Length: 274
Image (cartoon, rainbow, N blue to C red; front, side):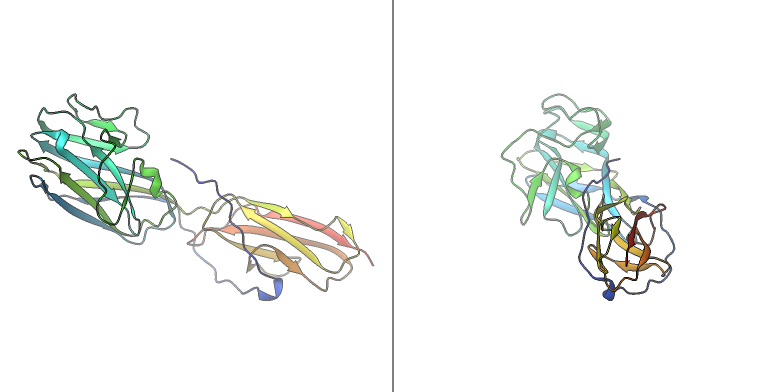
């Protein structure tokens, strides 16, 4: 699985903190959705089929596709694309590959992490392959742009309609995905690791303090605990005013989209002198 490594930050002051309801943690998930009916590809034409995903928490970290029981009398004519919900990118799963010999009931798993690509002119046995394209001048379906890696969907929302598009781009031959297709989606809703990016001096006379922080992944929110107060929602930089003399501390933790909280919060300590 691939892990996202982006920074999440924001801006608010302590006066804007709001209370939080207790959330039940939700684990990262793997979901497979299947379209069992045959996808029949017309001669010199295009068709599409869809699967729907709902209530899958977190953001996409991996996508794999299985094309089941594929037949075609001239597979080099066959182009198969995948489009994710809300995306204007389509991934060429297979395009102008596998030569001119008949494809007869093969099952192809398309996985960015597979060890090989589909061959240009040789036969394609059942197996796992990276998204594969030979023709550099392939035309994208209307309203989309082409991509050659399923990782372009990483970080997106998995929920909605996934569309498989199958095209035959030359006359005289036809085919079908006789067993349909399936899409396996991995998402990650775990909280990130919080890092303190700015802090007050360990000892200061200032009655105002600013604490900056960030997480190592996107699409998380934050909770802050100031001294003995309750955890509250917050964003960075956190500004504290009218601090009394004495010791102070701020704990900050990240929160996944459906409520998982970071187990070990980041911590800042300092002392305000009279």
